[in-house]
Length: 302
Image 1 (cartoon, rainbow, N blue to C red):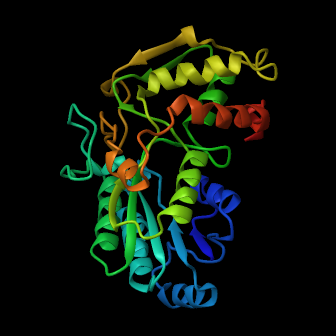
Image 2: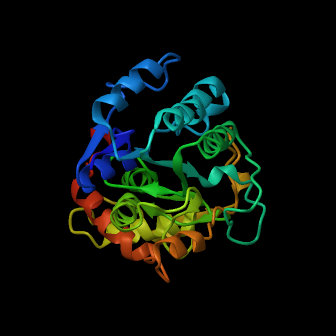
């Protein structure tokens, strides 16, 4: 069995290549999805490896920059997944999407059947990618997740740690709700799926750990963990008590964010035959520990 992972440079792709047996990573240097003409190269790559499973963790993730680069965002987030689905053959295609396909106005966790209403170019491009995959003939899963965090690549946790060493106070949005999703959690779930449920029904699935938080509480959690780590104790300029909660409107950005990014994972649990998923703290702590060991202490090292 060969697992072909697109987006091996990124957080999730890197994790999948590391964790999944017989996984082969495709980096940008090998196939650049930002280019207009890649279909022939993609077909050649698929013919060479004859993958049993294709994981598409490749995405244009610069949410704010996408407002000025819609063509590029759609090329990577929509056209490329469509090409993968077109040429997937008999392989199981697993494509990752985002909570940004929703407007966040609901007061409940979103299920797969809830209507989408993206607020931004990024969200619209991810929704277009979903449709390109779901409307294809491929045996394909579209998995929506939220707030990715891993030891490889950039993410909110690393940003907060860097700022905590540079500033004496922080202001963090407290009215956007969701859950951090560690990349090892996702790779473990995929491993279970590939080994035990390869004939899973095609379609949409939500996959995040259990629990919920907001960006402010998440930031405090990260700083508190760092304050207990001997490598960081003397480097932090702030404590969790120095983080100020603010509303979204006090921190305007080019691309609107959904206030509610909570996802209902009942369909995934049912498909895998499990009653619950791990709490986010349980799967987040080992990732934060690895980040705290590896991350540079001097912000200039970034």
